[in-house]
Length: 145
Image (cartoon, rainbow, N blue to C red; front, side, top):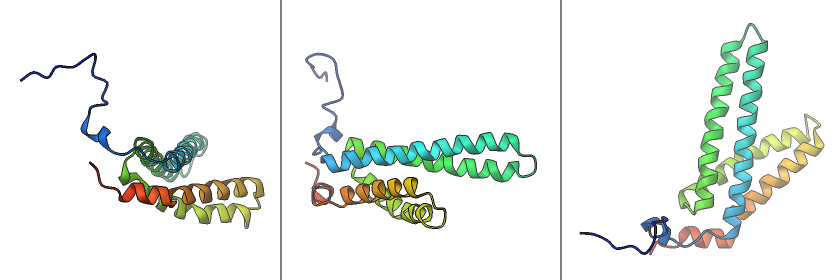
């Protein structure tokens, strides 16, 4: 039972590679979600630095850092899923964008961080629109061959 191959195996013949390629909107949304993941991981690092400088609430800060590390890792997985065409990743990405919209509002309004808030809101809205576009919906509903 040998299978003859022409050249080295590069993974292109794997069964999951027969799926239709994700539209550009979904792949670009994957980049935005990847940026969000990097932001969560950077915040994790900032919290860990803060934990070293405080004396009383080290446990609380470490707990927050752990939460953001988990969120960052999950967002990295979702971003990779969007890049590789995993249909499962679209829904968590949409939910993440919806959950982050109040954070952008808080940056614009109460925090008065206009530039950061507007950039964040534009990125969130763009990602949400890409993930809910007609091409993304049709791709998500298409059947695997």
